[in-house]
Image 1 (cartoon, rainbow, N blue to C red):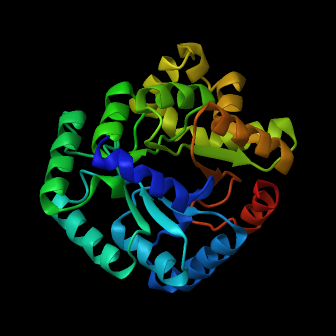
Image 2 (cartoon, rainbow, N blue to C red):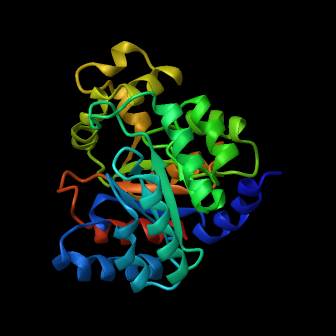
Image 3 (cartoon, one colour):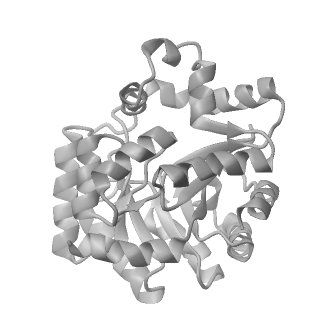
Length: 294
């Protein structure tokens, strides 16, 4: 067993079965630090094990959350390998690890050609980045990878504590678990819409899905797990939308989250989709969900 997989057990224990994924939990605005810290403290009280900093996050964004809590694990989801040099990431990681040992996970990904001007040979670039982190002393067991396809899932197994797939289904989770094996962490993100009106819920989900339908990394992933080109048109078919997002009341959403665990997920990072600003902190929704996740 590799060092990365042997340490995955402790990661699983520390983050528990549920976390939240939110762009709003990371900010460059000092005026928002208080709100973020308050939200993080409440997440810990509610029983969530991890807070995943959505969007183009960085190690430094973890500080307000770590300072405001005593147990909550914070992870980037993701930090783009194109945006930060490996040496800088390693130095930032070392600082956080010294201050708050064992409570930060460096979530890394290759992002998308549309979003990164220097995008080239992404898999090879990710391998080189991990090599540089190894040389700088960042333990494999403290990093996770945004993996969708088989090759990157294998890399998550061999060079990290595990995988944090985004915008996937339980079917993808089952396939990912088969590739990863039993030990590595598998922590998919899952979008949820606390709306019982079918038409409105699908409208909110489609608004959220629109950007991702322009990114080949995601559309290729959808095709690999059985969707067709027809499912990717007109904002996404009902079949696609209903598979990628849970909608309904708290109990219905709990059932959909449970399906990921039954398929092999260790942890589910829940993203609230409500039509509001991506920078908002949907604290009432987090409370409602926590009431059925205990």
